[in-house]
Image 1 (spheres, chains in turn red, orange):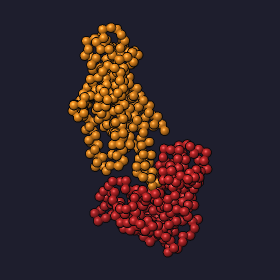
Image 2 (cartoon, rainbow over the protein chains, first blue to last red; image 1 turned 60 degrees about the vertical axis):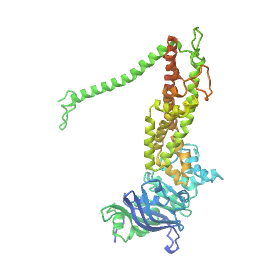
Image 3 (cartoon, one colour; image 1 turned 45 degrees about the vertical axis):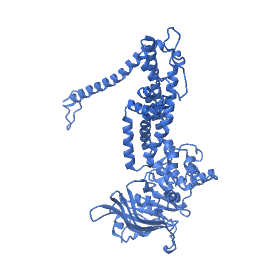
Length: 278
Length: 293
């Protein structure tokens, strides 16, 4: 019997049985390579609709690289290559006839550092809608997104102020509002709370729990407590060594969060979640 | 034990006096170098202004020159000021869009191999001497059909282009990638991201670079000697004719035997200098205003 370093809280609703879950992403034998250096190798897993899926693991295990594969954000890096498939609702998102813009339109992203546009709070949220042709009831759309991101009450009196005038936690919630205002299907979050204080972190976690009936969340986090608090499913990545000593990230274990934190089946997961490593 | 140092049980300060001496002398040298730089500019401005003082009046800007004038009728260089305005404006209109588009392509769309090779070509172009550009445009456009302000502007545009492209590339590189990712992550197309997010953010720097490029080519003489120097003395704004320009006027007046012509050349030089100073100040002001936002 292991002693979990993280107490798994039970405020989440019980997860539906696995056979009733609908996979939204099906990842098969995914390798991601920068130049000649592999970042992750051989990842296969299903990500389920309307759940929060956490990706945890030590620094350098390829968590961020992995999550950026889901909306083809790595396309921007010239030396990046990828093999294997990621299917979204059954379609290969890297197929030659798929426009990455369409992928990102469906699969939104919140980044590690808050990156509001140098525009007003209102325009930060409204700009995406406007550019993407969602011009009807813009005011209402902006209000709804800001309310969902738990920011409306703090900014409703100064929507014309610059988005950059907000605090770090507010900026990150503004970025979340911006991402959900254009109504994506999935929201990817790459360590969204790593630069935030505990109160802002809590607001963002609550928001994921509140919104997961509408969206599917995939969150990369360094913080195991955070994974335990918000995630239904947790994937543990670790760094492995290849035959020639090269380091790459690998999926070690993927299961219900409670299982990962209380009864992991792999020794390496157990070491990580009990704090003996990482 | 040093006279100035606070000695502790571990720290010996016997080299401290020497370090202080070195510090003082280096400071003095740096001060001297700065004074020389400022001094040269000061002497030059004063000498140009004092030599041109007699001709430095409103007539210089508003009245055309009178060739072979034997009277004391007031005359100026209005033709040259008009010509410089027309030619520099045309050159900017030609070089600015192309330079910005080159920079946008290289920085936002081109693969790294093309970026570095085309970047090298731009650097080479920036190093081509003005007189070579002048003779190139002369052979290409002027021979057989004569000079015109448009051809002069074209030569100046060739000189401006690498300058505008390089400075634009530099400011585009300063736009944080996180902003591009934020826009692309929403599912906004690449061109729209560039147009609506990246370029507005870089606008201040692009304006600064353009103003400096304008200041630089406003004083170019060599290319204009080939392309727009056989001009009338009437003030004209017609770019299809050769127009007199300030640098060419200075060059021609300096060869005149009449000391009044020399004074007018100095005065025109002083105004050119003022223009460059003003342009630099505007550029600074624009970039300072940009960074405040």
